[in-house]
Image (tube, rainbow, N blue to C red; front, side):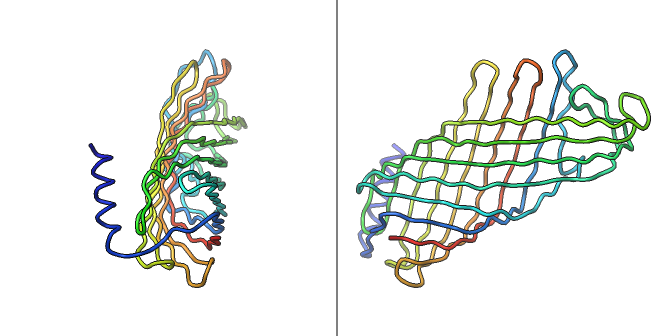
Length: 269
């Protein structure tokens, strides 16, 4: 019922103004200016009680705003079928004297310890799109693909550790989370061949054996083509990723929220 309403609404919008979507392939290159980068994480050793998750911004002082290069691509091989991909990476580190104790990889880090931490994330995405509705003004597409998130995290603590003063411990872990995703894409032409607004959303949840993961991602962008084939875009991107993985020796849990402003140049042919 919802799909029928979307198609009907798009038909009404598309009958008043002529504009064609003639792109064969597109390359977007620019930056993502992160406005919110917050993570709850926990690294637990087998046989030890699982402690509470650590909030990297509040407890460890990890950077919550940064900038990163982002690359997106799109290829339409028929009128109804296309493939798209994207890549970007976020790097964050923190340095703080902690005010309370916490558990990390089987060690109890005491209050007053100096903690250096890092959280690095690389995101790759490849999607297949099926354009099920496409007229002069509106294009609607369904998508399916793979969202691969590579996470590298760790801390070094100096101070009271396991009730022993002047100790130093360091531990980290890496997680690669391949998540199949399904989604939706919609594009609306405001001014023919010049001004467009686009919305994309991806989501999925998977759980098997010792692995659990979920993702909710969305992008809303306004794109202006100031000359033929070349334009600039401005938008907002939000991604929430939850990952739990147990390799038999350690258990890693990560809940990450990433949001930021997109600014990019686009080449369309």
